[in-house]
Image (tube, rainbow over all chains, first blue to last red):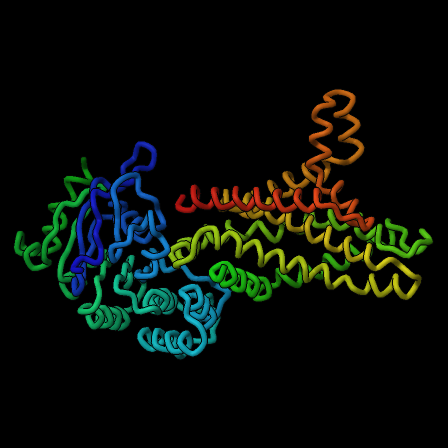
Length: 242
Length: 243
């Protein structure tokens, strides 16, 4: 099986507003797909549908061949998902929160402990393991969300703005982590930071007003104009005005 | 079922991670005790039983249980953690059941902590402990019905105050449906509705339990009432989760 993520003609309408309009793409193992677009372009809604949180109005999304609507639990087992804003339960400790996620993912006993320890090591959370999450800084909270998504070593990772709120060193750490995991997984990240796309993504999709405007490698996209920034503006600004 | 228990365990620990649990339990114990001994005339009644206590519990729960349920879903929606919870490999039904079970277990603990009352009547006289046991079962079932109602309403809103007020109002309807005021009013004007109101009354059902009478009809009533509201809860979560 080559494509771990298959999205086919996915559409989401809220009343008369179409948030995601007929989006199709696939992501194979080893690919890191950067999802780009202005705020409100439909990035998060697409990711929410892929994660099985928002029900599509039409079209299908499959993770490792499992349809997210028809077989939601099977699809979610293969998925590590970092929701927008990295929500966590504020009153829980880091270790307690990860233990809950491990249990919900069906890990018990020493296997759960090993998974939690590994996820904390990957995201350097060991120092704060017994602190309540509400006492942590924004960067740490984001890493707790990331640890939760990586815990079960899923073949598919969907990360909504994984580096938002991190300082430059932490951003570098997270990018290194993503690059390191890339060969064995299919990864989708959304971001506003265009340099991040050039740095870690093997492919970029630009989306605005719910439609896919470009689907190519970051290098090819950048070569269409003076810089990736300029290409992004040229593609999305006319859409915003329309 | 495993998924439901995982959710329940987290939720249950959450009560004790914040002052919610302690405030709830302390207020419940003080109020139930005070009402039993003062308004309930515990000493002067001359009978060794817990009738006055069982009479007050549904009215106490009417205000306290919605305080427990108001945050169940509203808080998840406000924090955005609902997105995390529902993208874990558990079904929505397991999440609904888990939250309900956690809150129910918590109410069971609050009820169990009224044990000094049981010791007191046993010290003062020779009560029928079987009747006391069924009375407690009845109270727990009443807590379950209020919880199911409150949790379903909590799933409809992000606002905890709205969840609380609506839950109290809806629970009050079912609590008051069997009271003499309501049934007399209805039977003189709309006799058909009077029967229905009495049939849906939670306090009427509890009366049997607190007298030691447990009928299959009452058990089926509580089970289907709770089941219906949990189903409504699951539907509400499914439709409103991403709003």
